[in-house]
Amino acid sequence: MVILQQACEYNFFVEKNPFKEHRFQVKINWNKLPTNTIKLNINGAFFKATLEAGLGGVFRNKDGDWIFRYCRSAYASSVMHCELMALHEGLNIAKHLDLCNIEIEIDSTDSILMLNENNPNLSNLILECRLLVYQLKHPILRHNFREGNEIAHLLAKEALKNFKISRCVHHARPPCFVEHQLLKEKHGFSFKLKYVSTSVCEKLAKFGN
Image (cartoon, rainbow, N blue to C red; front, side, top):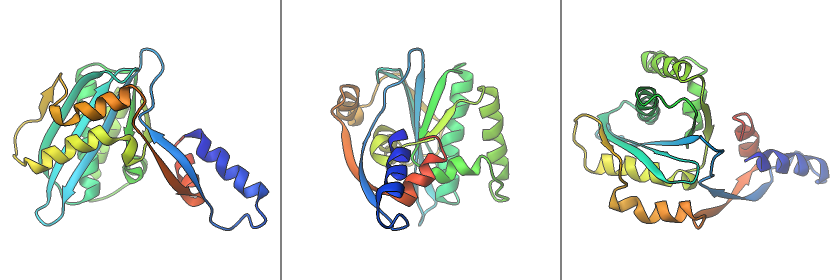
């Protein structure tokens, strides 16, 4: 995602009107990792009318092979609450599994910002997430677009679709409804082309993308 920052700089210096909002095409996919690194993709799905939420996440190795996934149904007060609960669940599992060398991807930039800001309505949850991040030795936490976070999105949707308040469900094998997407991502066949504005790319550059 460093390409986003480079593209912004290029547009600024070469265009006749550098302050005009430009859009350019970027390739979005699930990015493989350095050796001995595990990726955690996280997502939350929320239905405002009933305040029902689905939380989903998946741990994968550097090549995209499946390690572990979690799903949970819960009640949430907002989309932000839902996303933070999904993040908290993933961080808590990573801590219990003693996974320190991890990278975390989420498609909500607001959730990343919230870890460095205060929200009186979600303060306890934010503080718990901050503590887990500290205990995990500050893992990389970055944004990826929905298209690059597809499996976590499918898991969260499934938890919302089959809403049932219970303990978090853990599985070491991929469910059938994500197998096709998993194979596409593992072999590099799953990618989307997306037009991104200069303002969006500048925002993402602040997160290290």
